[in-house]
Structure formats: C-alpha cells, structure tokens
Length: 413
Image 1 (cartoon, one colour):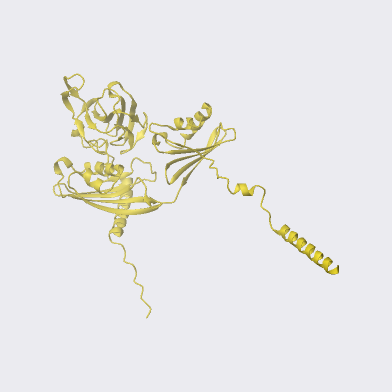
Image 2: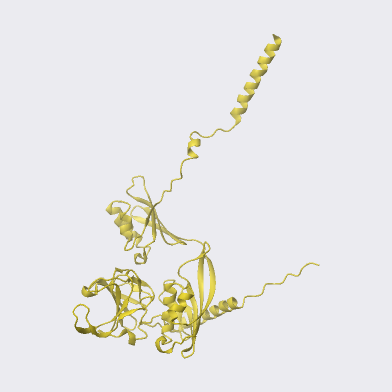
C-alpha cells in the first residue's frame, strides 16, 4: 500500500512539473496561426498613364468626387510640369477610410525618381526622392557608311541622343554636300546605371567629326546649375550652340513625302503652293522642337489640324501640323530636342505625316534653305565657365582613353 502511494505521489509530482514547465513557455498571440497565412495587403492603388492621358483623367479612374480630383490635380501642377507626363508614367494613391479622399500619393516618371505627396486639407506636402544611381562614362567611335543617323543607330544611341548629336553637327557641317563614306566621329557620354541597366537620357559630353571634305569639328557640353536651363547643351569652341538646327530634324528619322513649293494638291488635283515640307512617319511618332523657343500656338487650326507654332530667338517661327497629340501649351518655353507632340493625320490630311513649316517676316520660306533658326551664343561670363567645363571634359575623356595602370604589388619571397 505504501508502495502504491509512493507511485501515485510520483505521478502527481511529474504532472505538476509538466504543467509548470508548460506555463513558462511563451504563448503565441491569439490568431497568430491565422496571421502567418494572411496575405500582405499593398495599401497603394495604382494607375498607369495611357496614351493621351492626363493627371486629371488618371485621378478620375479612382472614382473620387470631382472636387477632390480638381483640388489634387491643381496642386499637383504646382510641383510637376504636367506637360512632361508621358504614357507609362505611374500614379499611386492611398485613400483615407472614407474612400473619397486621397491621403498619400506617389508619382513615378522614371525608376530612380519618386515624387511623394501627402494631402493636408486643401494643400499638398511634397518631397522628391532620388534613388542612388551609378554613373558610367563611355566612348563610342563610328564610321560613316550611309548616313550619320544610321551610324549613330548602329552604336545603340537613343533617339534623343541621336537628335542632339545630329542637330549639333548639322550647324557645323553640310551633310548633304560634304559628308563622305569613311568619315569618322567620336561620342563621349555619361550614362546612369540603375540595378545594372542603363537609364534613358544619356548625357552627351563631347562629339567630334573628322571628314574627308567636311574637315574636323568638335562640340562640348555646357551646363548651368539649373538642370532645366535652355542653355544646357552642345557648343562649338566659339561658344555657339548648334543644337538649334531648323532643317530636317523635327523627327528622329526623315522621309520626305512632299517638298516645299508648287505641287499637285492631293485633294483638288490642281497646282498649288505647298508652304512646308511633309515628312512621312507612323502615327504616334515623337515630334521634336528644332530649337529653343516659346510656343505661340497649340490648338486645332482648320486644315492644319492640331498645330503647334514656336517662335525662336531669331524671330522665325516653326510650324508642326496634323498632330495626333500636343504635349505643350501656348506661352510655354520649350527646349531644343524636347518632345512637343506626336505625328498624326488631323485636319486636311491624306494619312499620318508631319507638316513642317518655317515662317520668316510673316511669310513661309523653304525650310531646306535655312541652317539655323535659333542659335544660342554664350556671353563673356558664360564663356569663362564653358572654358573650365571643357577642360574637365577633356581630362575625363583622357582618363577614359588612358586609364591609370594598376599598381604592381611585390610578391613576398
């Protein structure tokens, strides 16, 4: 009997010990087993800007009250130039508990830059986040086989980079008469690398062209502190910008379908004067401003359809007609090479093309007879700064061409 009591007492002690130890083990919060399998909900609602879209139309997709959309769109324009919005840009929003007001907003135009907004009553708090990128210099050497555009394309340059180089050299060289097969050129540029891939918008620092008939020409980049300054670009050694070429470069690739002068009108079948040059291109092809200037008109204009006119430093006006889309507004300052619209077939048109016109003294003149419409010339103070920047570019290029030798580490004997 005593043995039985001892056994029972031992069992009780063991059970108590087990419960005591169990009480010392931390317990999971109630529901944690379920929480482990709950999906993480992204609070951001996302919209992608479609072709022809605007900040107002994209905000409308969130089914918000009109007053909220209007207020946010208006305040948004105080921080970001709405004319720079392009298809593919991303807008993200977080709505408040009511679902009728925006609490936070993020706008992404390129992978490395994020524009953050927080709605505070009737105002927007804003800050710009720039993600770190790696900068990489590159030297590209090419030889002319057919056209400069084709040679630049073979080097993998973007349309914007080709546009800048084409326009810059066009002011120095008459390619139509002086370019020869076998002419050589060099491009020195700076790329931004993000997550191992180059970003659009390589910065052209230097270009030279050595032609059998054209001779030797070189251009250097000049920059002001303001990254949006219209003076930023390629200049020759005299400090003259040749990026303002007015002939043949409102498009990245040129295919003339109708020249300036008398022609048979495609609608009437009668002889008439054609006040510009028609360039054949697919609908939606980017159209570029050929020089710095101010937009004097951006509207539908009868037979010209959607038409943009830009006044340049020389007083001349360039005309871009039959556009499917206009990306600028009257009164806006534009920079050479800036996308101002897209090729279309609006107005009196037989198909997608760009009508490019040039107006001087109130009358149309032949664009092919004009080399420059708005060349910039640096003043004395700017020339002094340009000289310093040129020397820095030369040093950078020399280091790239002749990298310093790695120091030899003596081996231990």
